[in-house]
Image (cartoon, rainbow, N blue to C red; front, side):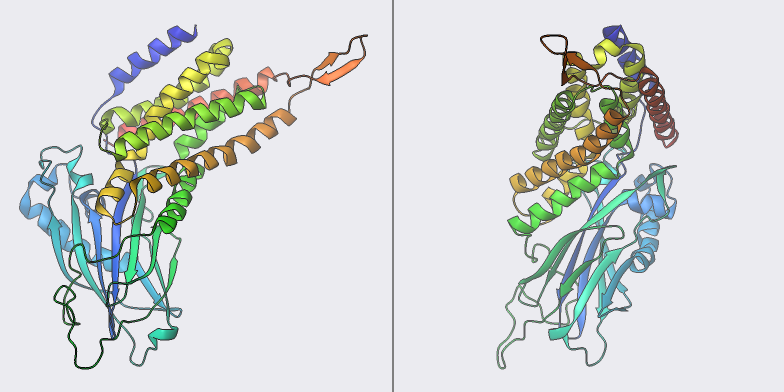
Length: 424
């Protein structure tokens, strides 16, 4: 029964797969240079973000006048939805210029990749208040990008920024990975140039309108590790697809040992595809990844009900591993772009931290959930040598609880699949 269900699943996915957008995961950079009287900033936005906010039709990026009009209009959105607070007071942000950063490796007609791999750079400026003492000033950077706009109903877009703040000598003042609603605070200071000397040629004076490409410091290994550890943890505990999948796995685990084995196998598979994608060795199209992620939720939920014998043991481990590979691809593309385009330090540190954060997220969700399920099950007791009560055996599953909870998970997964297909 388990093998037959597996075959029907892949047949259904083959019929359903169509041209979907990428996972609701958008990466940008935000570079800040602290000068004596202002903050000079450069931020990027993907064409996917521009098209969502500006209502650009699918494939609109192949029409240059339509594209440039949307990119120009998006400047006002950027200045409104990025926020800089100096000692608690919000600073106005002005857009000075913008530039379309074309990706030579792909063509605009490649609608599956082009809007997610092509960015627009916006040069921004914050004029500091007269008399502001930067030596004691603390700036808070935050964003509300795509707030209130969903990838699909109940599935929000998940944009984040790699924030880099430096003084006039390009010395790092602070770095962070900014999620929506999570500000980063940085103590500001300038790098005063000694009297009678001039700035180095590659370090323009205060009249520069933007930040030269490649001029900002990279995140240190420690900062990279901490930021992406939190990012991996956040991805799991706020991920609708992850949560449903983990619930289905925990429902049929039966024992703590089985639960830890399933979570371990799932995380290993997850880590493999994240690593391979970060290296650029493997990439699966979104039209395949998205419906399979949603379909995997339906599959494990139905397997718990229709084939409980295969919901445990080696077959369930194989299912967790196989779908773990696909779940990893759901966000690996975005992570790859962060590593390749944003100065985030070592690739190995980034991938390790992110995967460890994912594992901690799995445990943070799976362990308490399983503990609750176990408490609702009636324990069985093994008799001792003379028929006396012995050690407590594995808790016996309450069939009704597993059945109805698994059905709810399958319905949720089907709803997610329907919403994803409607988003095309």
